Image (cartoon, rainbow, N blue to C red; front, side, top):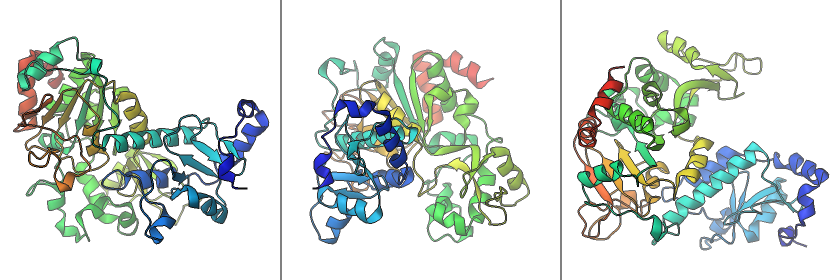
Length: 448
């Protein structure tokens, strides 16, 4: 008999049987690979379901939600092939999509797995967040805002945004920030043609610019990354007006969350509360060994950078093995931190009532796809150039940004929510604060 046929035959008593829970505990941890699952779900440009590995070999069509099953080793398979995979690999726990109470199933126990360990909680949040990304990528999106919660701006321009922020309607602002907000602090962004980071690392002879943040490349060639890290390490840089503006939103009880792609910790220095901060790509706040995962104070890396040396782990398992110590930032090939998923699920689609995007080209997924989430609420882009914009001809974003299906609709006749402030983002924020009558408050924070 197929074990899959027993996946829904759970009695309520089984969930409260201590012996059964002990069985769950024993098998829950036998093949969980959060990193691999994260990359399987998020490391694809369109945030779509990944094809069953065995079906792809036979050129079968992509499966749907209903017949997609995720082994917690990170392999995506279909209902037809999941049992064979688990038997061959001696794996037991799988996850189904579009389920709430019986998402995780153990083949060894033939039972639904309770969500009672941190690993399972984090995985459950990851799958929920992925489903939200996927559903909002559809046209029309599955996740939509109820009519009673939809917002209407008095004017679809900066003045309309100002009036909305000043109204009692606006209570939960989400700010999404990128490297552009730290350029004024002296930290280069990544993609500017002449001044961007990727344009100024040619001396390293990298196989491709992103290799400087590629974990597999760093393991073999660590020198370029540590040279770069020395130049951008926190301590020499001060927050910009944009960072202080985010802190000001928090002081006025308007900030729901700041999702930052930056690793420079300037939000922390500006005083943005950690409870309202999601450092989606990590930060230079702590460090770890890539092999044994032993935790280190970030000061150790700073000491090595000051002497132009590379830090290696000195714990007994790693001593003499050249295992690198790296800062807690998200490298290419690393998963996003669990707080990213859990925060998304709290903040979208109904909590956030204004999205402000500042200083980002919206090229890196899944962060860029966050602009798909707000449905029928205002969105303000503060950027030197427009990004994530719907093409007037096709009503879709460009091919490069195909994962952004709910792109900004600037200058379109049906635009009811989207406003763009161009030019330097620091000047734009100062101008916005003037319109809000917040200039004195911003200046006080900047003088601290």
